[in-house]
Length: 100
Image (cartoon, rainbow, N blue to C red; front, top):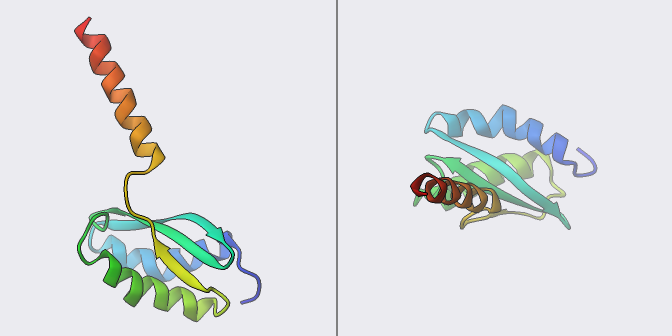
């Protein structure tokens, strides 16, 4: 398909990957594309699922590498995102304010 672009990858995710993940209450988000390596994070029921690595290998990798042979790898990002940490901090501030 030519040069790797996040918008093109998103389209393949929308058409070929997300419908399958949605059946299980999950989703996928692109964290970054760097040097031909796509870093993704699973959401919903797929986040933290013991089968997330299998899903990444059998579904995500397969579909994306078929569409983009120049894609070197797809890496699953795990752990707490910066957004989630910010949300937790906001909740803690609100609780602290409510106790005053």
